[in-house]
Length: 137
Image (tube, rainbow, N blue to C red):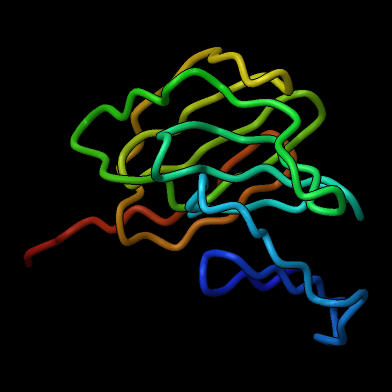
């Protein structure tokens, strides 16, 4: 589990919200991370708003390991809301589209889902969400 705040501080917590290690500061002003997913005690993935790229970042050494090419947002998506990592795939969730990258930052595919304002949960390589349907009787 993690809490990420102020676009430059990463606090890694356990299930009881106790710190696992000292807070980590991402000191570079070259990045503005939005969505973030901690992979282990050294690496994380995040979406960089400034560069419009997916970044694999070593937060212990405070340097990027790889940057993807620019993320082309489709379907009027404005930003990436969430990142999920499973095996060798990285899923970027935007309000209306899921973008899939490999673990080298290469774009694989995307697909449109109307998940905007819907509760959702990633589990392994699946996304569960609630689609509301308006019914009039």
